[in-house]
Length: 399
Ligand SMILES: [Zn+2]
Image (tube, rainbow, N blue to C red; front, side, top):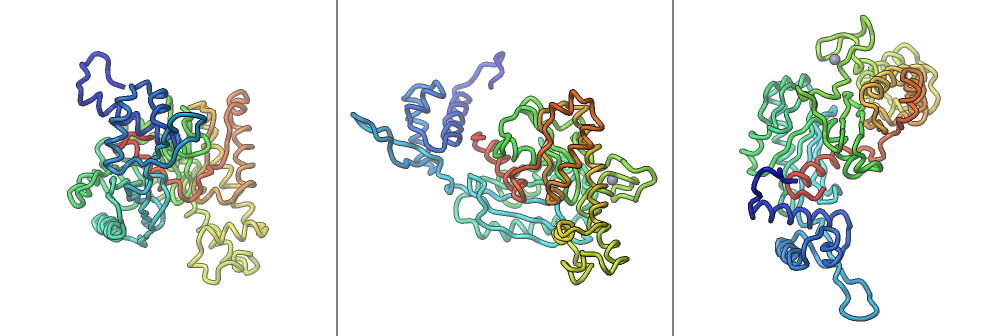
């Protein structure tokens, strides 16, 4: 919406109308020019003009017509989903992952690069390598690059204020990538990207108040309030992973002790499963991974599902501490829905039952009963869908 106090220029009106028409086509899948005019309240001439221009650009295509009893059947329009491609990067896992997607967020290519103990500069080099690998596979014009990064991110300026795991401080990532690739670049916190994915493509899409807690390599919450992403004053809203929950707990990579991530992140779970299996030759973990050094969260999930008794206790702890964090979110934000995403969600119904129980026990009954705790339905693709949403909203205004 344009601010009412300022005079709206012709150019602004054109951009606004253009976005409105594209957004309507994107949301409806297939729609006629007449229906677009009816929904947007633009004149038929304006709609036809914008549609003609979008067809010339290849963004929109005619996909058939609606059968009618008499007269000329109206032609249906659709977004040409493969007419532009997008690159999305997820820097918040144990390896850097990237994908090339179309405008519906369908992944066309994937690539990943192992991340170890790199310096900040080396980690940046890996980001370049990953984009270089993906960019040569693209076959259509690129809409831009969307980056989901861990840590404190100034999304407005595309600056990584602070990412402990790579030692990035005030890194102007957007500017660096923009200079190198000459494409639009957007950088956002991975948890914010996850909630954007749910808000745009998920089961609870367009819920004006929504929280997604991502529990994987790290833990954090993305928060949408009143239909807007809530970043907080220092861009750190939702950084619940580094709230200390265990007194005299283990040292965390942030330098503090007993953070939620030292208990409920996939890293912490794998570490505990390793020491359990090392001490106990009968642990079911051995059945799913021959070399404990190679243990990953997937094999821990398998051993848990096979009934390993010690892992039941581990996941009960994971659920307890994560549940307390959710109860705090319920108390502070009173949102109707909190979705849990990330690799830790693979522990499934037993984990979800613990989370719901702990939230019910640790929040006001009236609040808890109004908050649904569910797993995200978007699975592993959530972050890539979020980078797609980021680029579609910023570049085309269609979501
Ligand atoms: Zn920490």
